[in-house]
Image (cartoon, rainbow over all chains, first blue to last red; front, side, top):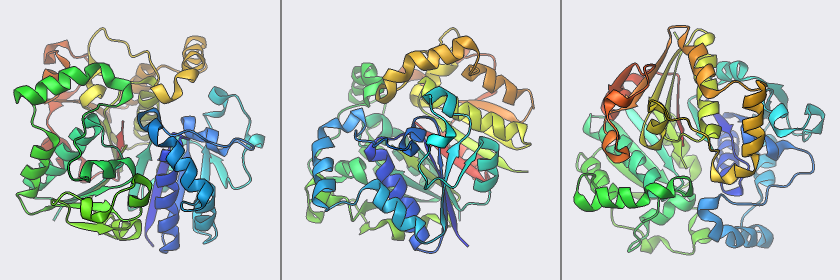
Length: 136
Length: 136
Length: 136
């Protein structure tokens, strides 16, 4: 079976959107897909936190993106993630070593997180992936 | 044959430059090279649009980069792209789902774009690549 | 043997940290690990230069990161790099074509740089890697 692994180190909407789209498109196409949220990306997995910014380089497109989400012409990153997860082939991992830096605990993670793992475990998973990406 | 696939989601000069250099170097070395421009990266493919900024993090180097391009000590990103395309082994794809967000149509694309495809098609192409990168 | 190759084009602390962590974790796990510093990333290899910023998108976390480094709760990027290099399986390469842009010479490189190579040579090394990442 084909497999894609994506390391996500940003929670900006314009980073989450392509990351979720690639992972869910892969899962819907029959691939295994594994997302590893680390560093600033881990913020997106905190219960009750809703990413709302685009990256500084493209801040001028922020309102357009918000409008596209609000009008439904673009699905939200969580909707896309859930579409992938519904296949049973998309897994979400939180990086075990980042919590201290961001000041929250594992019990504050969203329920869609499958596991909390370290970099060595993730590398073992990515080793046999067809595609591994770093999205920051 | 070796193959590299690159997803390009930024049109900042300091992102386009390494993306084009890696793709064209690969093509000139006999590899297949496929570039998939999506999200903000798609802007670079709009006819008549000329990317001119470096990313915010390195704005202080903008003048130096412009100077290097102007003096010819560094080729422009389009020159590097054309060197790769001259081999017949470098293909340029535009992401079909990004046009709505950026507010332009497929007929506004530069003539060097080989095709307009979706994420699923791109994943199928990248599946057998030796290297797949995400440049944002 | 497993192998990871990482292209590093930024010297911001929040980019260097995950790059070094992934490379050194891999090396410590028995993998070969090769880092290719190019573009702005090459700055990190300049003797006497100490990267101190986080990327603009996450500037608000800068003080927290500095504090974590100062208190020792997080090792510095160079400490992590040295842990990987101590295995003998982690190599550091500087991109030969970037020096002109940044205005310094090969003799100003840190002593932990193993070699100065071009993009074509790096691609040849990455071709048989299990994982190749672009961190910008």
